[in-house]
Image (cartoon, rainbow, N blue to C red):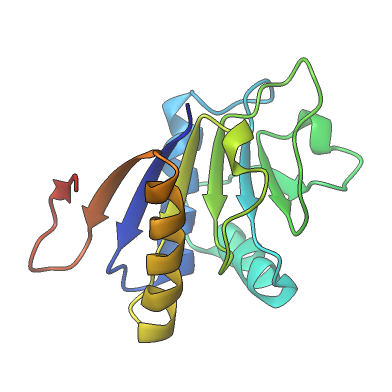
Length: 155
């Protein structure tokens, strides 16, 4: 069953998502065979994330393309605005949700990361996503990234 990780109280939602992608990519668990997908239906937010993924670290290059790109089947990191599942023999692995809603295809992935920024609107939308997952019995791990409590918590 899919597991859900909520990273909340992030100072910068998109920058934190870049760090998650980098960590997953360098772990060796994400690959062409087991891609990581970053989803957001809001095109401007996804483009901003795409630009930031190129710029956030001078020491790292994270190969990534849009899911519709001709090289998508060879990329370990994919960006998409619509429902997407990698074609066999690739196995859906990690999904980072930057959208305001729960993606309808999230359960095809082993693990979902929800990144919650500091503003109240984002927190409120995240509470609705949290409730959605919880009410359906998904295992949720909470990671409080505020300076006051940097340790992970489970509800």
